[in-house]
Amino acid sequence: MNFLIYLIVGGIAGWLASIIMRTDGQQGIILNVVVGIIGGLIGGWLLPTLGLGLGGGWVGFLITALIGAIVLLAIVNLFRRGNVR
Image (cartoon, rainbow, N blue to C red; front, side, top):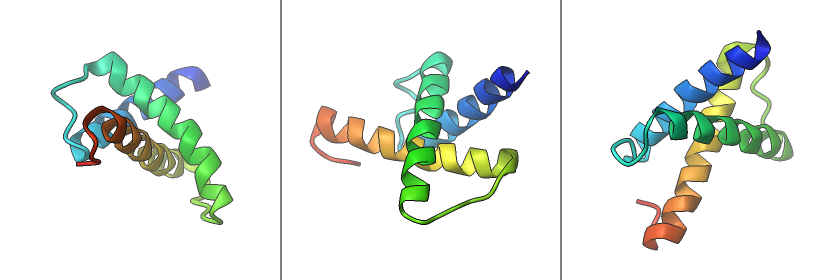
C-alpha cells in the first residue's frame, strides 16, 4: 500500500514540478511519476543536509518531493539547453 502512495505523491510532485519548470508539454505521466520519485529521493537527501526538516505526513513528503523534482528538472534543463529557464 505504501508503494501506491509513493507513486501517487511522486506523480503529483513530478506534475507540479513540470508545470513550475514549464516542461509539462515535453513529458508524459510516466515521466512525471519518475521525476517525482527521483525528486523525492533528492529532496529527502538534500533538505536534511541543509538542516531543513519538513516533518512527516504526506504533505511533508509532497513538498520534499516537489523541491527535489524542481532541482532535478533544473539540472536537466541546464545540461539540455544551457540555462535553467
